Length: 405
Image (cartoon, rainbow, N blue to C red):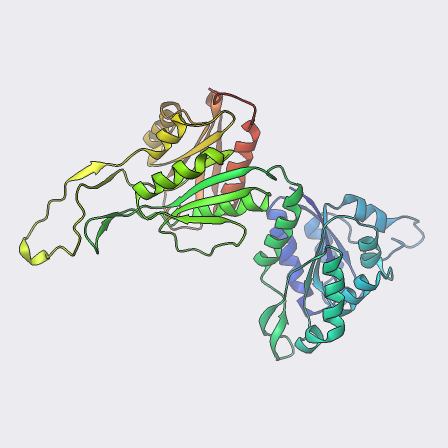
């Protein structure tokens, strides 16, 4: 995905940078580490070298008696520099433009995105000098990840704690995404499971949590896309850089998709839309004491995917999802791609235990044109989202007039 220089300055939070590096590697980033000399008192450079597969930079002049330009080598390698943890001293040096060590020298020789994740004692964080230095860095375009509030290593409670690794990675990837392939691309994603009212209390629904669609939206946003999510009954955290439209029922989702899909370059239909709904929804609550059995006539809902496929504009890419069971389900998913004239169908086997609805993991088969199929074994939904978007980008051509066969 990207070449990242991870700068580690001194502080007890330095040990968390090992997990941070591994998280970045799992996201397919190539990570190389530069440490301040004091940081090596908290974590040995051998740890980072062994896990990254690259030598760790510490000294401006490299190995003894070996001339080199390590600071330029690291700067030329990097798509972005992430300094985590960033101590008060390192922040001050960066703000002043000091080149008193390999990390600060590399930062001074680098003209790309800089992400700074401070960690320090609350009083050091709140000191006017530190705040002024952070303002200076932000004014030059650096991206500051504010520290979390919590229990610190010295026993104090307050701001200064290193943020969660996921928060740091999200900020880094949003920063890097400015130069990613989806910049300027508009993506519409449907999410969750619709609920079709029986009465004012009960409904016909399904078990979709929306987690897969949320992962797709997060990944698309990190890659620079303009993302709109049409969500049916999803109770998950929302990002300020994504537009959300709530549509509890299949009919409301259909109306929203009609309104938004024409402006979308890529449409990903990940929602579990009810196939049937009650013919009549009772305004109040049905009194169960009136009968021992209850018959509810159902009628078909509109097939949103079929309608959007029929009205797609030239160059628009359409991705459908198929939640089926077993080998027979895979056959139906293949037929669905042909029948509904979409570019990709993502099949997930709902009969497999521990994945799918409500889970943080999934296993998918991405069915594309020309009998092309990509199987992703059980993995976090975030990883599945990456692979789905990779597959979509591989065939995305805004100039084409028809979906690939």
